[in-house]
Length: 406
Image (cartoon, rainbow, N blue to C red; front, side, top):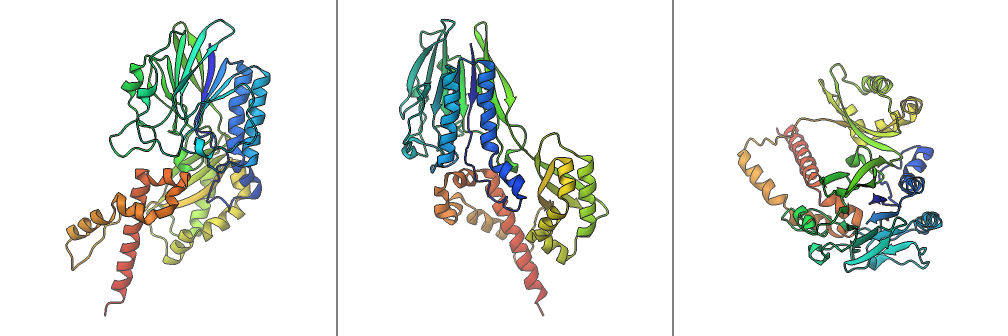
């Protein structure tokens, strides 16, 4: 038996914040989720797999474009012509309530409903395969669904499809589960979706997050892809394969003799020449300077004006290196707020009462209704970055006030 497990295609991802890219490159970035997904379907045809599993978030947004829907229909037709079944469980980005398809998928496509159900296949080899799963009825599924999955069927193979997150004990929105609960079902393979980093939660039987097929920001650095799963006796062996059209990377650069933006420009050009990439890589460069920039240069860098000019004048260099610098960040030392008239503990106490999940959620407001923003906002890294930025701003304001003390 042979099948492909993919998840989180996120077709129609908007790639916000990249409008400054050259038009040709911006087009390539915006088409990258489609090209990455095409590699999944191409591999399915090349390997002549028995079926394909797509575990949630095929689309990035509830409002699915005509182009995205037509694209999937075309890909499904390609596999239908090759008699390859496809099983879909929709996730938190493309949940059932917002599925408004006016054209039916080809007959080789099976879409799981809101309740856990099981479909059985008989392969050309005579082997039987039971596949169990469900689709999100709405954006959040707060309850553990594993109890609704049936015990292992009397088939040669039994596979579970689950778009969800490991239960961490806190507030849950994405079908929380534990690995032990999955193993108790005695399935031969669990095809997971939702977490964008491909990873193995259990070796045998495999419990696998396929990850997303295309990274969409520097927070999704590294290669992306899907899994080709083949049978070996009584076990299933997953093999990762790459699908990403572009890569994202954060690079650290320490400069000891740079104190102007002109010098920084020269150092970046030299660094690019020495660090060419094999595949188009959108790169954030985090720079640690031994000497501070002037206030004017710091303001130019912070505003983004300098980087925009640098990008436009160094396109040939970036093209030769197969890298495009999308951000240059100064690696400042951690901010410590010093107030001569107040003990430091009062600042810490104040921060603890201000940077609470409730306050941050109130500040974020209705923006949390947008699935892509909601997923970003609940990450711990986002909270940490917001607090750090607020501390930096407060420290600057305190410094400005001190300058006016007579």
